[in-house]
Image (tube, rainbow, N blue to C red; front, side, top):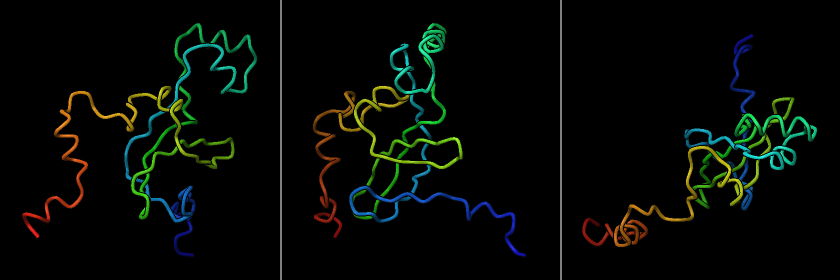
Length: 136
């Protein structure tokens, strides 16, 4: 009975929301979602209003079952997905929205450029195939 203890068979595979091809994890860290007030805790967690206000009084609540992670699609490039792990351990995914970026730990929105990078450097980094002119 080879590989009876292998965990490789239990790895969950994710599909691209645009083309349904397989996505590959890029090995980046998980950016967990947090909730800072009782209204957010009440809508995102299955708790009573009293427990939500008690959790909010202690400070921001980091949800370890919901996070944003970076994936790669061969056709569409890098994609950021919001992942949610349920009680059975299965993970569901959807594209990360603006509200997810605002409530995630240690991230900045990738759709806005870094303010410390100059406009020229940002524009040159987005050019495709400019190196072929000199080296190809």
